[in-house]
Image 1: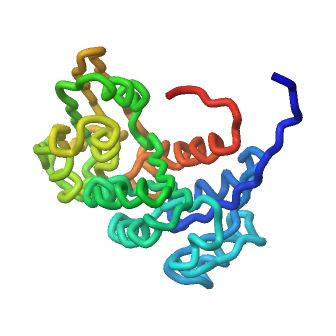
Image 2 (image 1 turned 90 degrees about the vertical axis):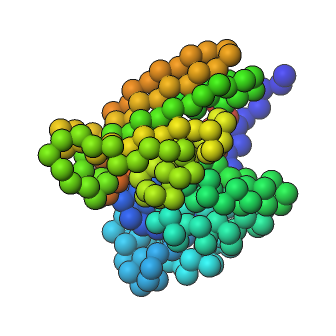
Length: 266
């Protein structure tokens, strides 16, 4: 191979939703992001408020646009919306042929037809690892045979709108049922399902525990190639206790990977 100078293609990033996750991604794009990434546009509830927020986050040149115009204003659309709004946006962009990084993974699990439409149209959908570890091994194990995937999520009551003086199980069932019951809380279950054996076979328990200060995910994957047991303790987001602080950084890592020629992991 003949050495050549690296050519960095600049990708225009659009962020749907400048809440806790979207704002953290925007701050990173304004500061520590690698060359080749720029925030070109963002969309929120109100265009004027979004424009003011962009200036606060260090992007005075980025455009504030209506949500239905965001896909046309960027190369990569980063969805950081509430689940109900995310479902409508993903439906609108599934046939567009662009690149979408989505945080609301439960919306994809609830509407599997969205992924099939994306495959047919060539739309690239990227699901960040978010608050869950081990997805590389889970995807590799899925090439063979996986017997079971089990998730036990334990959160402080504020993250589940729950009460009580001690630990209590607020849900037990499969991942599809969990996403219907707690659409803002169980993106981990949805991500495991999409990477592994599907929502119907992925077993989920959700616990409220007032003794906890972190969101805890205990995962067991039993496959013919491997047995994986993990315990993950994530700090809740300061702006949204239902989410983990690591989620925004996971999105940043995905964006960095789009322009970095070196890739580590599956």
